[in-house]
Picture 1 (cartoon, each protein chain N blue to C red):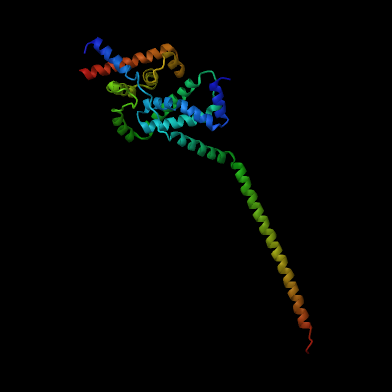
Picture 2 (cartoon, rainbow over the protein chains, first blue to last red):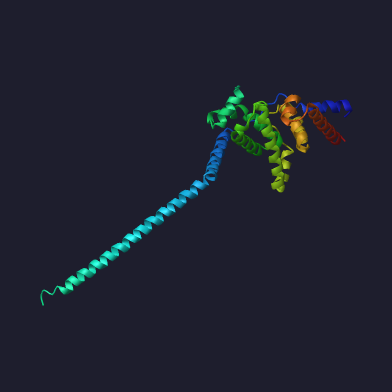
Length: 100
Length: 180
C-alpha cells in the first residue's frame, strides 16, 4: 500500500462512524437508576439522622427502665401492704377466741 | 433563566419528572460515549447509571458557565475513564478475557458498509492513552467539532489537534504493521 492509499484508508477508518446511529441503553435502565437513587437516599437518611436514632433508642431505654422501676416499687409496696394486712388478719383471728 | 438551567434547578429540587426528561434527552449520548470507552454493553450501562446518579446528586453544583451538554459530556468522560481504571485494577483476569471480546467489538449503530473499518477504529481507541482516547471518541465517534472537544476536555484547540495527530500517526503505524 503506497502513502496515498494508506492516507485514504486511514481517513476511511476515522470516518467510519459517519452516518451511524447512536447506541441506546436497555429501556429498563431508568427504573434501575431511580432505584439506586432511592436506596442511596435511604442510606443518606440513615447516616444523616444517626444522632436522632441514638437519642430515640436512649429515650426508649430510659422510659422502659422508669416503667420497670415504678412497677417494681409498686409491687414491693403492695407486698408490704399485703404482709401487714396478713399479719393484722392473723392477729385478729388468733386473738379472737370466740369458741374457747 | 434558560431551559438548561431550569431543568437542572428542578432536578436539584428533587423533581423526578424533570430528571426523566433529562434522561430521555441525554441517555443515548451518555450511553454511546460510555460504550466507546468500555466497548462492552453491560459496562456501558453501569457507566450510564453512574453518570445519571451523579447528575442527580450534583445538579445543584451546575453553573451555567458551560452548556448542559458540555457538563454532561465531562461527567461521562470522567466516569468512563475512572470505570476503565477500576476495571483494570480490580479484575486483571476478567479484563484479559474481556479484552479478547473487545477485539471484535462492533458498535450496534454502525452502517453495514463501515463495520470493518469501525472495528479497526475501536481497536485503535482501546490502545490510546486517556487524553488521546477522549479526543478520538469525541471527534470520531460523537462527531463533535474540535472546538467543543476542547471545551469538554478543558484544553486548547491546538492541544486537541495535537492529540488527534498523534492518534492518527499511531493508526498509520498500525496499518503499516498489518500491511507488512
